[in-house]
Length: 339
Ligand code: GLU
Image (cartoon, rainbow, N blue to C red; front, side, top):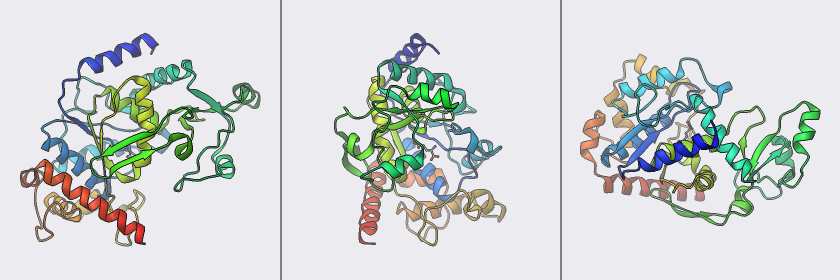
């Protein structure tokens, strides 16, 4: 895709902005959906249906080595079985085709070329280990890249001589403070240079990074509201910076609490016991699962043991929905602080 074609695409998306709310659920087909994934999907679906907007399903099969065969199909089946329908998606054409990331590589490539032309990215030969060792002030669990390759002009030449491919990082040193007004997690700020560091937009294996692809897709698909798990909160400023370079305003964000397993740990796709396929094979009904998921985040009373997605929608309104989740998220943060 050329720069001119990219400009066309950006303009088309901007022209199609009609103030209709648009939300999305964006699963990665790296294994079967577990209950935690499903709860996030349910919340994203409820939120967009409460807003009377368009719900988009985007298949994030960007990380090809991690994609599991048959997983995308089983995700569509699982969501459909739960009564979470979508208006545009891999199997439902819409104005922003394609809704499968592996079919959008030329778009990501054109955005990367634009960032390169603008002098915003640079080649980097540091491995994850190098970064971890060199990082002086880690923020959270992720070390901040110290900028080792930022001002070296010879990285690409050196990489070629060594027969290796560099990764490419977005330079965030000049980026000012980023303010995120999260409707569930509250207002917070980020100082990219100190807290986040220059981050990878093209991986050394030639694949575009999650941050680049998600930011580009949310812009070009005119997503107005992003409901996703709070584990992705730290990605938000990165994605907002990429959106800025495309001239788009960021969507509204709602980072919702993650569902924990019996031992209080984050659920993982590796633990098949919590997968929907497994529960379904034991004869558990969709209404029972929805009731459990909705009760687990306070949307309904725990006494309710079966409810369909549509009945649940009728029980709620937007204000109630957002307030309950806001309180939950604040509660889980103060719980984490006191642990
Ligand atoms: N594909 C990502 C995941 O499954 C979610 C991306 C997003 O919601 O921004 O974790």
